[in-house]
Image (cartoon, rainbow, N blue to C red; front, side, top):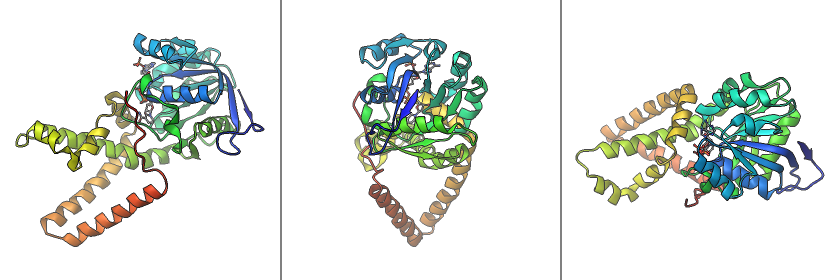
Length: 315
Ligand code: NAP
């Protein structure tokens, strides 16, 4: 692979990396969106996609996302100068145990997973000498899954966080960063542990709360299910969208980022108890102060261009 700084990128000054063969292990929402970017930007001579099910593999071919498909991660990785893990986090160790040994020195392994400490733990031990690991997390997504759900604009204007360890190869890090810039993303480098803490509060905890509140409503005996659906516009509807996210992917995220999520959950519970007390004692000032502060945060998110609307696409 190479990075050609002389060619203008999508954003002014962005370089265009070029790969002989990209192996996309997993070709769902994120893998297929990246495949579409690789095609649009002409970053790869050849794309090989790996998925477990025949239906996903044939859909990937039908959509023109890959030049070849396989169920075997090693077959996809053989000859690849870039391997991108786009499966749920729980599959990484097995996938890399199979694919790692066939990689040639100079190849880059990256991923798109939503937790990052676990990537160093599960992937690094399977890499031959001279193969570079550059973990990445595009902070972009929808609640949909599968190759049909992807679209090339998914990463546009979104952050992509790279978490290589301190000794990582600078050129490999820059190549992965350049690929994400071509996808329209803004790239930031971060320590993996810090990433997991930040994402625990900005993404993982909100999903846990959504899963929990939708579960609570579904279990209520005094409110009927039809009432829950009928009056869902009162706030519940937004939670149901988040709680529709892929069950396997989110199971793996909570298991992988256990420590950071538990720490943030502890703080959340303390703050919730404070609100509970304020409501019990009629302390309107505490409630209004908090709601004023949170409204300001929403405005800051809008001003920074990160508010959405959620970049959804119907299946
Ligand atoms: P997805 O749409 O469900 O796709 C997952 C893909 O992985 C499918 O092609 C699946 O193949 C394949 N796969 C699963 N286990 C495999 C295995 N053992 N070997 C080979 N292929 C396997 O998932 P996604 O939403 O793209 O998420 C993928 C990753 O992106 C996750 O690690 C997630 O943390 C991260 N991420 C997701 C979002 C989001 O909003 N969705 C955002 C940022 C990052 P089959 O169809 O054949 O099972």
